[in-house]
Length: 219
Ligand SMILES: Nc1ncnc2c1ncn2[C@@H]1O[C@H](COP(=O)(O)OP(=O)(O)O)[C@@H](O)[C@H]1O
Ligand SMILES: [Mg+2]
Image 1 (cartoon, helix red, strand yellow):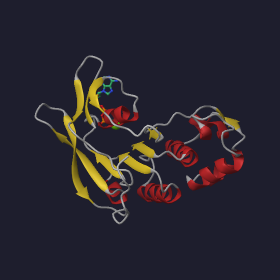
Image 2: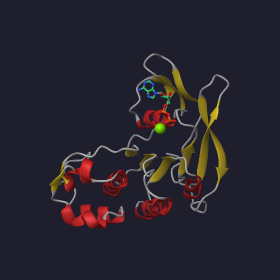
Image 3: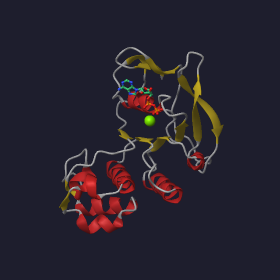
Image 4: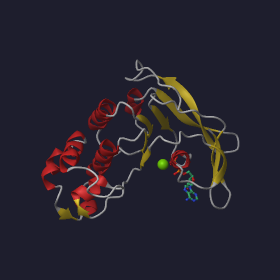
């Protein structure tokens, strides 16, 4: 991937001379606020249209990008859990199991309840609802943009361990600030300042609980 993302006015937001994300190697991206991390994730996911360069993506690999504040529709909890797929895509049993794995077991009995879920659920519960969607959707690539920031560190680690166990074919690429996240990934990229004032991701250390896993081929 060689890429330059700009804003609508043409101002450069983030530039990456060359970056390869390896399937099977969970990667953490950290760095200063405003350094272009989210824009980079949006570009990789195909939802940032401004800029130039090349992103090579496997055509058949499903991507999922979770933002810090997920969209939670009103209606039944089942609908909110299935989003962006339509309710009915998954069985009630599968939705309950996904909620349990996302540490939302207490909501399992309410999947048919209609409520103002975005108002009723706390920020951390909404983030876990988005994690339940991941469990249902099983994407090949999962981009977590500060998507577990409202959870305490222990629960965040539990969720990461659950994802890696339940979704062995999914590669997680995270944006986060907490140092505890480093141990949950194999690669760590840090946004480093360039001379022109923008930032670029630079590899720092190789560490983490997944260090012993065999990297699959780059796809
Ligand atoms: N839609 C947009 N239009 C113009 N500028 C934007 C837009 N989105 C983000 N930016 C700017 O791009 C820079 C990087 O933003 P972002 O990628 O959100 O940074 P980070 O995720 O590292 O905090 C910021 O200066 C931000 O204001
Ligand atoms: Mg951001």
